[in-house]
Image (tube, rainbow, N blue to C red):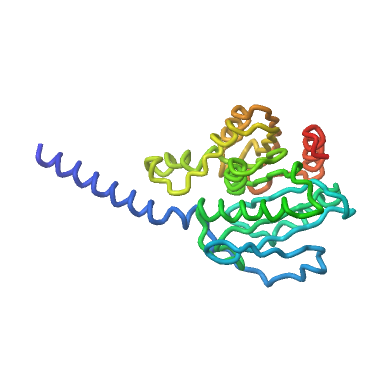
Length: 270
């Protein structure tokens, strides 16, 4: 009996040590910023991009704005949050179609990523995206009643958090998760240990506007069931499933743009 108790005590100690290590290291897993090389700053003027530096409580965070074409009267605009292994540098060419549709695009960096100050967390990302929204809504060439929030993967958490703080015309979630806490079981850890829960499911349940959920049917990082749960939680939701995994979603950008444009027209944004 004593031997069994010693084994159980040892197992409890090992598990406690594992949980403590996981608690301390989880942000390195969720935000792998040190594994992403920072590219040389591009010629933004040549790319037709307006740089914007957000003055947060922890330093300056970079954002890029691609104005709609043609410029002039107040137009819709999209705030985009990228994945955890990416930078805003990766997205202007892929998302430039928004500008051609007459929609401005604001790419917001995460604190501590790329050339931006600070450290990433739900709190610091929330502060950054709220400042970005306020700066965007104050622009004379943007119609604040037609701001759309668009997040991919981790970016879904960023824009769902923002949706709880600021009004928007529509919400687009691509390859997004229900919550970070939902992944705790994958690591055999209790959900309460998650420091940055990003509860997207709760945010979507409360969201009053139209929601477009895009997810790869074979997503190996964020299971397809997460997208299904987000769609089921939306009051006014639409789901599009692509034959794709996580990093190759969407597999066909032409189809993606047709789907997004159709959604924005149905939502009254275009």
